[in-house]
Length: 462
Image (cartoon, rainbow, N blue to C red; front, side):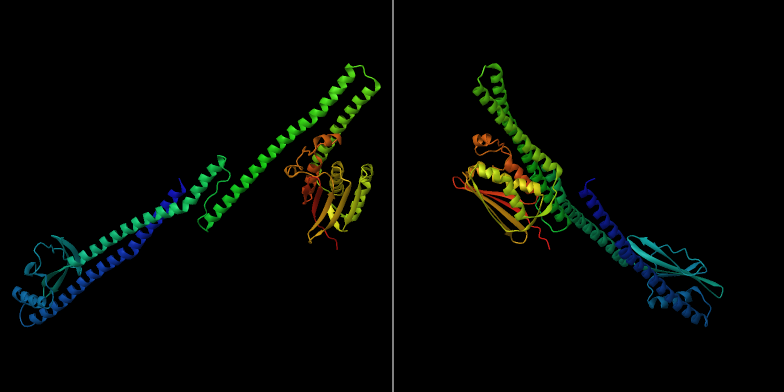
């Protein structure tokens, strides 16, 4: 059963039960009480009549013996005092009657005053009766009160209550339908949105029209939809990157393997002199070195992901000096100059991995033909430390700058292969910086040089 139906049935049940209870406790109780009060009034009037009749009869019988004429005279005098319809029998013989002949009044007994409700020709009467004995004479007295107008008023009130009941029920039905529809509308929208998301429309959102719990649920649903869209986009990007990675990896390994197989076959098939064999072996060695460099970089990336970080506090000056000593042979071989101006500070990093980042960046600068490399380090506010490595190499064009951190991407492929590069250095560096909670930015101008900015969260000791 749908929530709309449940809400509708529930509200209608509450409305109907409330009206019935209200009608029973107020209208019904009031009308019954009014009816009983009117009957009591009739009995009271009858009691007054009987009291007056008895008093007058006793006064009259002191002077003469009771007979039908005397009783009729006393009854006439009493009726004139305010009792319109009365019947009196004396020892079973009717001596006076002003009651409608269609009204039955033969139920009087000796058990005190009683009454009956009699309906005749659309009129309603309250018939009161009793037995009175005096001087061995039995008087049966009956009176009839016309309460038709009162009963009509009561019935009119009942009809008005039924009309009001039906009007409230109709209004309640309309309200229940509208209110149930209003409450379940956001749920229906969420159901439709779920189908849209299931069909691949991950950016579908619900219009939030209220600030209640359903509005909060709609906000949460939209947030979930946004997160799903972002996750799907991330997964699609990841799949594309993996496909690009596999394609690039296959391409990068195909070229050196082709060269290795070709030169090996050349040595095997041909008679070569020492110089030719040396050239072929050199080509095989260079391509093998490229494959080795490629495998080492891949192993670094895989091991970085699996092993995690082992952070420790280090001083920037000590680390840069260690980097200078490690890279110095390449600096001297390239006849380059490295200038360091680093503000001494404590940083919280995996020493070996962060050293790998700095060495890779300097090595790329040397491969780009840089003759002067500047390393600058300083605090950026109170929460970060920035290390900038600037070179005067050939630089990178704007259309290639956005892709240099992609795996296997090489700006100058012929120069990179000659240097045994595989296009994985900056990809590895970027991943290491991300693992440290920092970032790696590159600014470069073609023909002028490149600046690599390494930004790390700062850890200050007491």
